Length: 430
Image 1 (tube, rainbow, N blue to C red):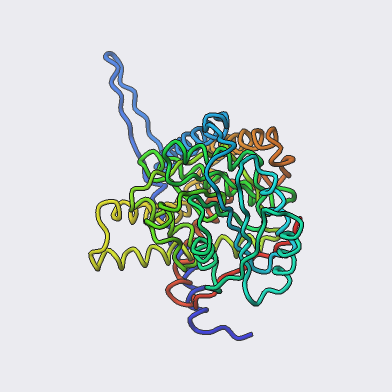
Image 2 (image 1 turned 90 degrees about the horizontal axis):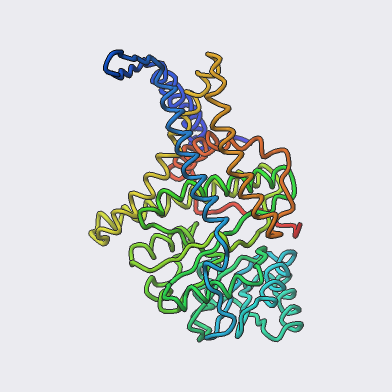
């Protein structure tokens, strides 16, 4: 199959970009740095390569963010006081070609320790198999009903349509393949009763295979990277494992029809100044991608979506539509993309140190990263969220340069070849 010139340019640009960033890292890493310390009677002088200080800074970042994540995950769930009964809550499950996995979310939701709860499955008009399965589940459970999306074509449209068609003052949003912990909604409603506008739990892939374990580790790495940003008031909220008041939903005009409607929603909530409570000790699980191609395609879709949201936000800035919080939101998006690209520079510096037989430059951050993943996985296994990890946890350090390549390719794809279509991961119900 012959590639279009734009596609060839995108691939060549990705290869050249990776090479340039790697060369920059190597050249910068060979710079000699000097540190002099005067100790009254003696002077101590250290001479070392810049690569060593860069890797030391990275190790400190991994250790700090990892410790913050482990602390949050190990916080007792009762730190968010549960509410078993209260105002009506509607759980929305938008679906498309999800007939093989829909039971996971619906069956777990009807077992929730919160009442009263309605479960609304929103199906697409052209998805007969999923609509049939949804109706079977509705017949088996009184709390479940089926809506045919009146605004078809996107997850955002399905959620917005369901909210318009229901009158509940509180709504929750989940994906079809999510397993929702029985106490999750009770904790979420406790947070809303305490004054929160939005409650966001943690959702992790089920690591029941080699590739699935890589996906699980990737989520931990990303969740840890969010911790520093959250210290400055930005809290992510998504379109899954999310509970909110109707008032909050309407203040941000619901979800926008973009590739990553959840990321757009998180920034909209931040710009609006909503109180978003993050509780990663309240954990649900989802089906992980089962092949490397699916894992890459899904993550690239998310990154292209991030660039789409950034593009739209820059447009709003130029039109004078965003204020101070909007500028901070814009900075958050830019720093995420820039940080991912920096990983390619850092990887080449680390490679330089390995060539020079400074093995500790790899072993120390590797140990810190694997320890972080291990401590989080220990908690998840103890809570019966996962059943352990596979050997591929040892591949976790490769996620960092992969982030850089993914970001570079996504930037070029968005500018040169993306036509609005998005990659869909195959869900098997495993």
